[in-house]
Image (cartoon, rainbow, N blue to C red; front, side, top):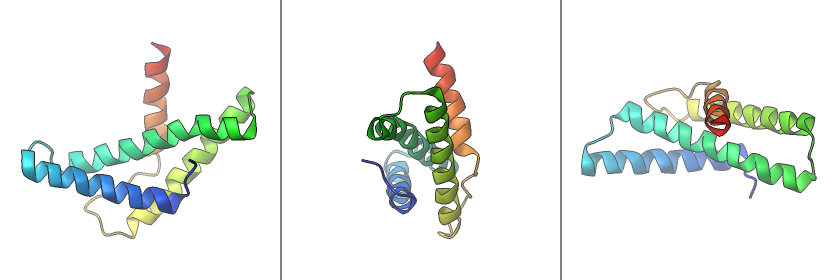
Length: 110
């Protein structure tokens, strides 16, 4: 299911709170690590959404794929802006999606 940015903001907050609760139980993650892991989780879910969008649009070209990646990057930027209003201990970097995407591409090429 393709989600809007607001839905991902709520999902981010749930993931982050879950990681913080786990931190209290296990004591393994720092607050920063929980935040970074949550950013990575949401960016990964945005990447997984690309396939669904391509299928919905019946798009098969590289140009269409690039357009969908750019759209997802813009969605992440909207998510990051909305998270900035939530008074979290860290700010989500607007380029995080691109960083996760670059890592994902590198791993896929191996």
